[in-house]
Image (cartoon, rainbow, N blue to C red; front, side, top):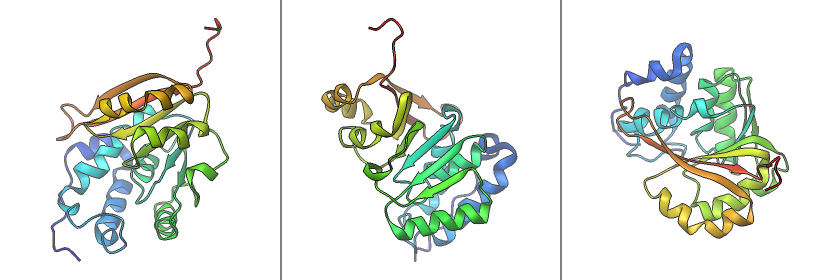
Length: 214
């Protein structure tokens, strides 16, 4: 196990989580204590756990509503973090690996997150529809869109946490975007003047209905 020191809680954490900050602290502490040993995070992540992972996920919390699926939830980034920040939203964490599902279930129970359901499945096998589908660090858009767009209700949204190369990903995914009727594509940069590193978010509408028939 790494001897790296866990990053101190940034001041922005309390601002983003509000009265849910204690739950965020408990989850972060659990991830710091067991995340590397259980193969959930790498050995270099502890000194940047809050800024790179927890707050990077939490900053997008205002973008969600209704029912949300987090595809490839892994360590619970962003799904568990967002479930802490937004108890008014129903979250389904989709993860195919058993050991990660075990972790997600343990954390859901330990934190008392009654707005979370956990599904051991690949995205292709979920068979449900949601108001919003999200993912973080799963794959490039051209491979992510075909497995996530079918899970979005008509007129619902895709909200993906992405890196600096998201404009290039969008360009490479043009054919896939058209095929899956993904429209209103935009990139938002969140966290300026709040986080040390901003978060880039890919947002799009799926099969949006136009009342004018266009």
